[in-house]
View 1 (cartoon, one colour):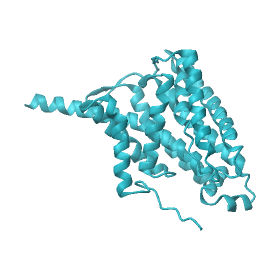
View 2 (tube, one colour; view 1 turned 90 degrees about the horizontal axis):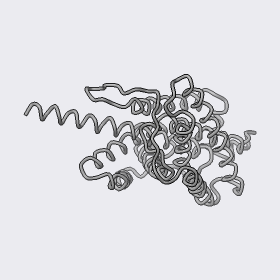
View 3 (cartoon, helix red, strand yellow; view 1 turned 180 degrees about the vertical axis):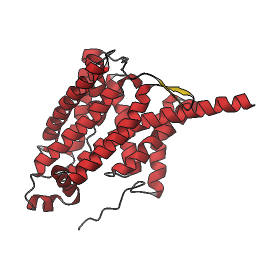
View 4 (spheres, helix red, strand yellow; view 1 turned 90 degrees about the vertical axis):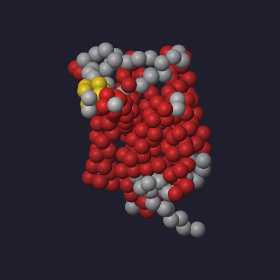
Amino acid sequence: MLGDLFNNFDMIMTILLRGAAVGSLFAIIAMSFNVVHNATGILNFAQGAIFMLGAFGAYLFANRVGFSIWIPMLVVVSLGIGLFTAAQGWLTLKPLRSSVEQNSWIISTMSVSVIIAAILTLNFGVFGNMVRGPVPRVELFGVRTPGAFLLAITAMFAWYFALRWFLKRTFHGLAISALSQDFDAARAAGLNVRHLQLLAFGISGVIAGSVGFMVAPMISVSPDAGLRYVLNGFVAAVVGGIGNNTGTLIGGPLVGIVAAFTAFYIGGAYQDLASLMLLVMILMFLPQGLFGRAAARRV
C-alpha cells in the first residue's frame, strides 16, 4: 500500500511538472499575444508558427552543441525572428487605417502562419525532428526531469518580469502602454503609433522565437506543431484575461496541467478538447477571464 502511494505520488508529480512546463510555453505565447494586442488591438495568430521558427533555429544551428555556441545562436536566432515578425507586423497593419477598424488582420496573420508551415514542410518534411540541448536532466521532487522543462518555467518568469520592467520603466514601454489605453490620445500626444506597433510585433517575435529555441529539446520540432501552441496560447491568454500578463502566469500552467492530466487518463487526442472546455467554463462565469477587466466603449 505504501509503495503504491509513493508510485502514485511520483506519477502525479511527473504529470504536474510536465503540465506546468508545457503550460509555461502556452503562457509565453499568451504574453506575445498580449504585447501585440496592447499596442494594436489585434491578435497575431502567426505566433505559433513563429515559436516553431525558433525551434527549427535550434535544430539547424544548435543541435548537440555546448553553451559556448548555444547562447550566441540563441541571441542571433531570436533577433532574426524579431525582425521577421516586425516585417510581418508591417504587412499586417499596412492596409489598416487603424488596427481595429477592419478584420483583415485575422486572415493576414493566419495566412502568415500557413505560409511559414508550408515553407518548413517543403524544406524539412512533415515528420518531427529531435533536438538535443546543452541543459542536462535534473532530479526534482524525486522525479528525473529534462532540463528543458525547468528552462521553460524559468523563461516564463524571466519574460514576465522583463516585460513588466520594460512596460513600466522605459519610454518606449510606457508609450506602448499608452497605446493600450487610447490610440487617438497617444497620437495626439505626438507618439509615432505605427513605429511603436512594429516594435511590439518585434518584441513578440523575440519572445516566441527565443523560447522556441530554448525548449526545442522538449517538443516535437515539426512544421504543423505551431497550430497546437497558438491554440493553447490563445486559450491561456483568454483564461488569464486578454492583455494581462499576470493572468498568463495562471492561465498558461492551468491549461498545461489540464491537458497533461487529460492526456494521461483519457488520451492525447483529447488534450485540445479539454483546453477548449476549460475556456468555455471560465468564460461562462468570468467573461473577461481571471484577471481581465471589462472595457468601456463610447457609443
